[in-house]
Amino acid sequence: MRSGRKVYVPASKRLLASATRARGAVEPCLVRPTQGRREERLFLTLPYRLYAGWPGWVPPLRMAEAALQDRSKNPFFQHSAAEHFLAWRGGRVVGRVAAIENRRHNETHGERIGFFGFLDVEPDAEAAQALLRAAGGWCAARGLAALRGPASYSTNDACGALVGGFEERPAVQMPWNRPDLDGLIQSAGLTPVKDLVAYWIAASRPAPERFERVVARQLERAGIVLRPLDLAHFAAESEVLRDLYNRSWEKNWGFVPATEAEFRHAAKDLKAVVDPDLSAVAELRGVPVGFSAVLRDMNQVLAPRGGGRLLPTNLWRLLFGLKRVKRFRVITLGVVPEARGRGINEAFFLHAHRACRAKGGLGAEASWVLADNQRIRAPIEAMGGVVTKTYRMYEMALSLG
Image 1 (cartoon, helix red, strand yellow):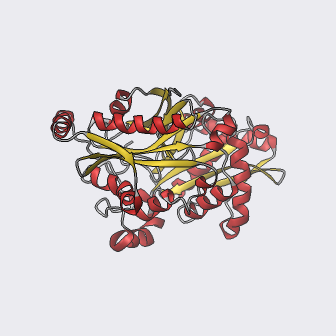
Image 2 (cartoon, rainbow, N blue to C red):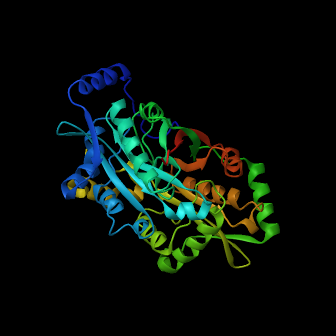
Image 3 (tube, one colour):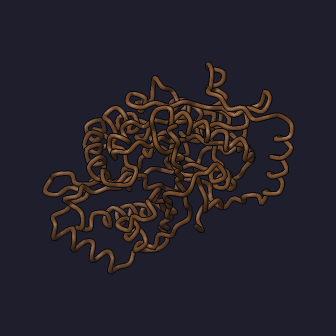
């Protein structure tokens, strides 16, 4: 990716390894569930200490992270459960993980999978292994046969460990971690199960003329029309989008249909950053059959040194900088099964590309995409999209004793 500010990831494996040995020699590692508000706050704030000073990390807003982890506010906990664990050396927290029972996932896919998420740990193999053992033990005790992740808390949230593409900051709502996390996870016995990729589609590169002609002809023959998202009636629009979202993605690997409460909760948060010019709804004879949602990349205006706090700096950056953002993220795009093969996916990307160019944007990241989903990868690559980041999901069998 040539656009945007480049960042540098330090080559520090030797220093990280020596730090791990030094800490391991001092105190044993103890992993236990969080107890009380103070430890829940330690769970919340650990990444802000671990990653401070790493140029690839954009501190997420603490208020958003707190709301995500709040069992009384996050609709995920209306149907599923999780336990938060902290790893301690002496009186110091060195890592965290969430063990997750996503009941809707298991009902949807007919599986008995447990998940882990929010895995953040110092460069300490013993701590990483102890955290994942604790998560696996919690899941096994609930009769779950395998541990998969990271997913914080589900595939509708941030998921995957970054394993390639550390040179650029992540797009809004995409995860970031140190380069050593892949090795730490595999040292605990988990193996890769699925890769997810992020594409960068540069606005500076025109779409191929032949591609545009073919897509226009397909839409005309099928009677497909694209319309903007209706933000003026967003509550009603959200119901249309939820139906399309659940129907379009239902056969995808790891997909969990969003409940009404979950989708409404997510839509409320995304309304402030969705770009209606780049997003669209596809209609066939007036009936919605697909949609794309494109966000302004809020990470481009958040202060790296703000520590995730809204005040005093980030509030003003968001108020005055968000509408001038030049980078975007295609967060979701789908077409119901009965309307596929009519050029709608291709039309969504063309529409976003044209709108981005019209407002002087640099381009958009399409993320995430299953690495084996050629149906979506093909139109992105036809638009000149290139893979810039790879994220990985892992899994291991659990012993139910």
